[in-house]
Amino acid sequence: MVEAQTISEAQVWEWLEDVPDPEIPVISVVDLGVIRDVDVSDEGVIVTITPTYSGCPAMSIISLDVELALAKRGLEKVHFKTRLSPAWTTDWLSEKGRASLEDYGIAPPQPAGGPERCPHCQSKNVEKVSQFGSTACKAQWRCRDCLEPFDYFKCI
Image (cartoon, rainbow, N blue to C red; front, side, top):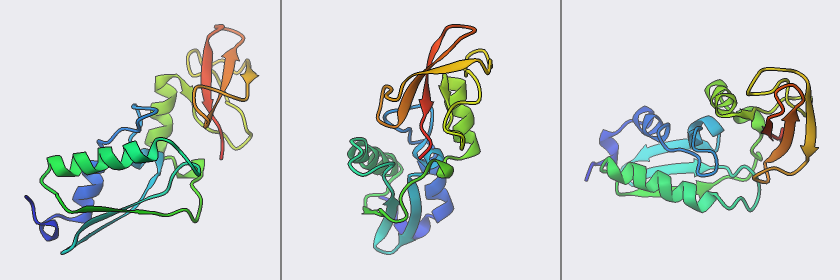
């Protein structure tokens, strides 16, 4: 067991960058922006999480994955706080996270409400197929040039 006071907050943040989002495993929970705070004290580590939306089914898995990742490094006293306000927004996605989404074939969120280009061929000739995608936070789009379908991470 590692004593929490011997670990820095920066070290915990670094470890959390290795915890993938369970729905989109190419992006970490840190790059997704759901980890809002880390507090290290004599009482252990407190990780504050903001769900992407109220009722997000992945939150229990994220908490479990965070707890397991920190336990693997010897931290046994891990506590969680859920922060609902301010609500999560796609503005909290890191630039690294946005690039990871696009490399994976998911168009990252854009302020205009639709993808700038196809994540497969970079064409701007795209169309919305459905407001609903593989998860609640994504919509289904298609490229008119390469004809490939792709998910668009909705702007929230």
